[in-house]
Image 1 (cartoon, helix red, strand yellow):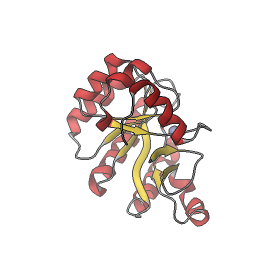
Image 2 (cartoon, protein in one colour; image 1 turned 135 degrees about the vertical axis):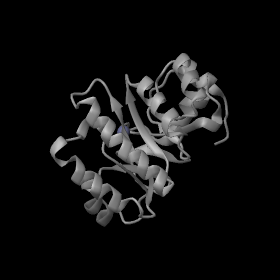
Image 3 (cartoon, protein in one colour; image 1 turned 90 degrees about the horizontal axis):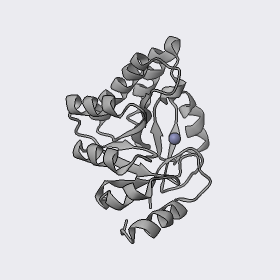
Image 4 (cartoon, protein in one colour; image 1 turned 30 degrees about the horizontal axis):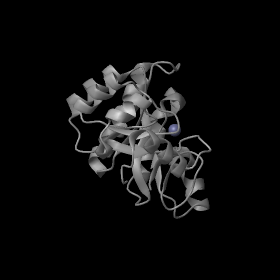
Length: 194
Ligand SMILES: [Zn+2]
């Protein structure tokens, strides 16, 4: 089973998350490892953003880059929202240009994210990672065509209503294995054959 977003795990079925700055050193150490690569909204620095985005575009074509991200919007962090938007828009363009899915981090900015998705109407999957929202939010996002990556913590009521076709699984920062995450999900949802 694919672990679509991890900061700690390695291996064939893992998409390890790295930033553009970390990439070169990481690739030397782990030459076969699939990655997602992007600038987390928490780590955006205004003075180096353009440089880091340029670095990101120079790496993205590498066949080990499975997805773009994580990127996204977080209204709880101190980085100004317009900078987060600028960075996110750049990631979106790369995702469309290189035909790779987008891994999204979203905190208290689901309205903005939904509006953006309508405006862009992307061909690539937009996967909200670590999704813990309630069923009401999940239904709204489903209507807009989002995908959901489920980690160790999630809302059980939401899991019951999300169709398996829209689900991914992840370990993120957790020490749990991807099998343990999956077991936890199917203990609520029943066997979903992924
Ligand atoms: Zn993460």
